[in-house]
Length: 479
Image 1 (cartoon, rainbow, N blue to C red):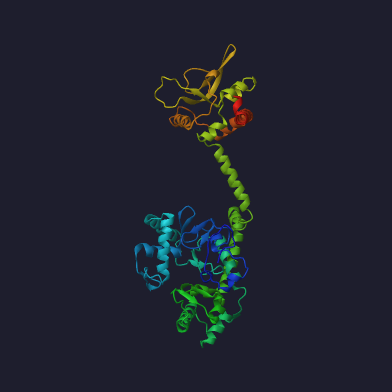
Image 2: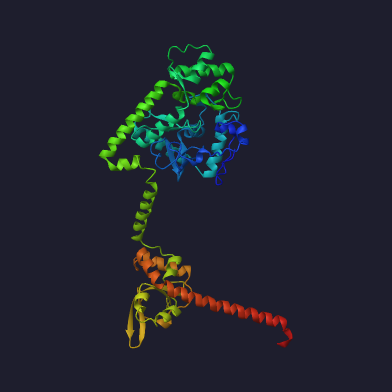
């Protein structure tokens, strides 16, 4: 199965995403979990290296997910297998004895896949230790590892562990997800209709309420009796008609049965509704006490665009006070050739305003053997008038500069590097973004007009040269 999104190149087996082979032939739009947050279903920002689990920026702090490199990291389920693969352990507390070299097992295939991902992403043992420390720190900070719940039944079998500490918005999303998932279920006494019918069909007494653990044990025995385990994937279960009526999945992970049974118990549904009402009351009180909490919980989606605009505005204001980079692209905006300065001389009223703060190119003293470049870039700090002649005064220039001494060519990258060294050593003040932008705006029209005239001259020279070559080719004997 391929993703509906054009930008996504991921392909899945129908069985791996809880669908049957007939789903491929349908025209139903389908998107993998990579593109939406596992908790609130908003656009995903962080992704797991090894599986389609993804999280948005708001939910990353409450999920057992360890960012390792940029926007990629490990979810809790995949990291447990990564630890087994890296430590070369042949046993797991959940399933007992495993063989990481057996390609017929899920763990063996994951080991091969992990080796590919590790080489492709350039991951090392240090990255694994860093992720392990992050997950342990999250558990210690939240202090609610035993109260953590698994979420994601509405989207598929894969789940992330979410902590229930200080996450009002996430809990609201979770409660809404449970309510949506259980809306189609009908209850007979203490359990859902599909669950009661299943237990009755196999001869179990449903007059007395069974615990979630007891039902999990009964279903596990039923799976062993009917031999519903996948022939190759030992943890995978192929649901028959009876199990499909309960879980509405063609196949599922054996370790996920207990959590999937939660929505089939009436007491769990009532508890979730009570928790939802309590959360609504608490959020109402929180709104009256704290406007910031109200914006975060009640208006998170509606104000997201406004917040993004504010953040961009704040970042732009902060950048205005920063220093501009001394690179060729920036210097070109305020670089004046000799011919441009001569043109500006005709603008007596604005000459000083435009020239001061710009950069000019001057030939070095031939006796100066300290530098390899023949010219140097200098920043004009003022002008000096002597009778009818105007001289330029520049930083780090011992003498005044005649306009005839200026260069009319392009400066080199080496000359820009020398200018950068002067700024680094403190010989020249580093311009700010505001100063550079204002100077570039004032010189833009003059520099552009001069550039257009130069390009037109070059174009005419090319035309004349082409005409001459054509004339020589047509009349070779008239020379």
